[in-house]
Image (tube, rainbow, N blue to C red):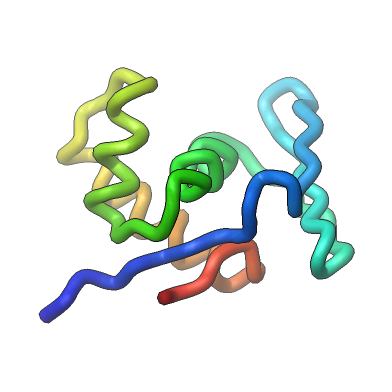
Length: 92
């Protein structure tokens, strides 16, 4: 079974404002603003390099952040589903 690839709008389609532990992300194409926490902004930043599957996103995040990739895979997969549900990314 092929891995599911995800893509997101380019960074200029979003405006991010940090609010302590939360970030407000305004998605310009939809006009919606979302309150999110880590690792949502980091996932969107990782997708700025182009479409990727969950493992690819974990690998991109591991370059800039220290974490256990085994634990991260489950967390990233859950966050990808949430991001897809709110329209900040989609399957390619």
